Image (cartoon, rainbow, N blue to C red):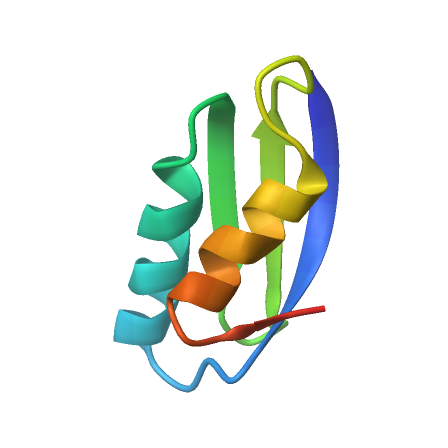
Length: 68
């Protein structure tokens, strides 16, 4: 398992936070996703044999937020 922190731009409310967390949790291979609204970051634990950082960033981008 690998753990990464992704900067997430554009979140302004708890619904934004929930949308990003749900998107990340829905990626196959993700074991844990925690989104910090105030810090603008998502911490994700995932199986690097199943998914990768690019897929996680794409999931965030698909929700309309900026994964940096």
